[in-house]
Length: 99
Length: 525
Image 1 (tube, helix red, strand yellow):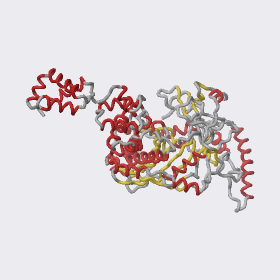
Image 2: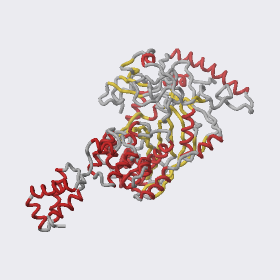
Image 3: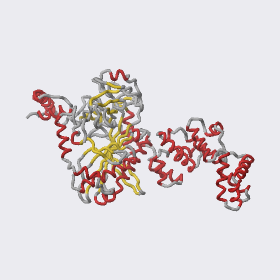
Image 4: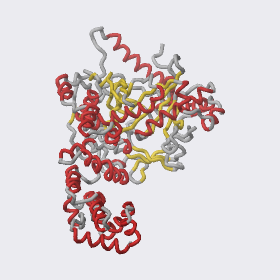
């Protein structure tokens, strides 16, 4: 059985605002399935004495002091923006109709 | 919904909206029950989610400054702009402040926990996710005791977790600058990444008609506790303390109802009003057999009621997962114990102690606390003023001025030492009330200490009896009719003469001295 369905891929694409064609849905579902099955095999191999982990290095408590460092300038910050206006990033409308 | 939102979402929202009977709209605008009627038939359950912006010098995961009011997008860097390859590092001060808040709210501190990514598509977060905490909050299971009408209520704290604030959006093209109907948005990321602590209560049942007041008292207590820790300026009007209020209703003996979440509640008074209006609104729906939708509503400051916002059903898939770029947080037990031992006196204990010292009522103490004047009055008394004198200036003239200019009382321009000095001049008879207010105005304007302002502005009570007597005689001569009445024993008529003298001395005489002098000159004393 597939680890991820075509519908789930469509749902994820929608959440990520990715325009995915029907063809691509089939292709990505297949590719993602291979990845997920591969990762799932690690779970089969891991014995009970190996706890689940989200980090590959056994580190905790890595902090920095609360000391300011130089920021980007406004020009630098906006240099990669598709659109800007009066020092702000300009983005398309967020919600069109409401209620 | 249209535009960037795919078609499928559109049909979903339409379904939800069209599901609501149209009669419902009429109900909410006309046949509203009274509050008393509503709470006599339904039992409210409330819950509060409060966000506190921490006052750290830098953001939570990068070293950008956090100054309020800076030019847009000047306090940003690759980390908080979510540029590829940028890596976050946690700010120790943010972790410490969160733990201190947790301890002050009687929470247990996690021995080990992780940050998580909350994924969502919205331009206020350039990374497309908010770094937050999910099922492993830093602090859990605490409580806050609040007092309403002399009775204590314990509000359970479910969790206190750390996350980051979002950017600020300006919606352009809409009728009112709001998101609805806007054609585009302009985003400033200066605020994105500033540490934000979210404090979530457990559901609070059993409050009955007092639910709105208890909700307000809880937020006020939370604000005072956090202010006492010095980790945030907790100013609701500036957004460093924000509150979402959950409300549901059920009939006695029945299961809890579906809750709605009201956002945009920006003052203590609004917390109370929001709960109250939601109780009334939900009652009006339940009365006609309409079910309550779990949804986000927005509080309307002008009308005091709530308006439907985004439907919750479309926005719950956040796909949380542990943040791989930040290592787990494992607070050292000794460090936590140290932080706990160093917590300041609880604001409620402090208020009780000071209330006794100052000899004032619970209501008066509440006003003092709400005005943020507790420490200021305390310091003014320490500088030599009487409790009554200190309270009078801070809660009167200075509170009024702070209100008018929209600044914190502490930033109004007068120091406790100056207020104490002013009261001393009044006590010594060198200033009367009216003159003292003028002197205080000068102090606030930055003209110096009270004595200096008094000298520079030529203010001060006229104590020269010769000059006063002359002014009194002139007033008597100019108002023979009134003088005759006073001579005939109508002592009350002397008020007009006192007024005349105060006018010629430009208010710089002591009214009681003037009155005594007039009565003496007219042989009526």
